[in-house]
Amino acid sequence: MSFMRKFSERSSRGISFSKDANNLIKPRLMSLTQTNGICSIMELVSILHDFSVSRKMKTLSTLSFINNHTRYDSRRIKKAFEYMKRT
Image (tube, rainbow, N blue to C red; front, side, top):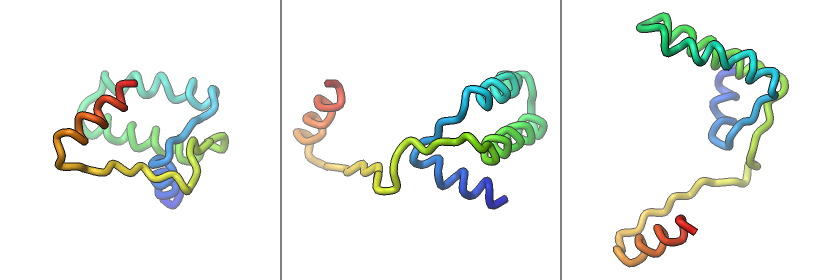
């Protein structure tokens, strides 16, 4: 379970996997739409576990990265941020 915990912690910074790992997991992810109930949940957990033990996992951002979404109540500041996000 420690693999899953570390995987969860790293996922907040973004994770990239090798092409081989992606190719192995892709059919399983696609088949999730064909299953229902507990079977789909168990398969999803299994997929997450397989990703978590993958040796060719790369974290996309550094530890110093903080995704800081500051909330402002000013209508004008909100509009300015919306404009900056578009460009």
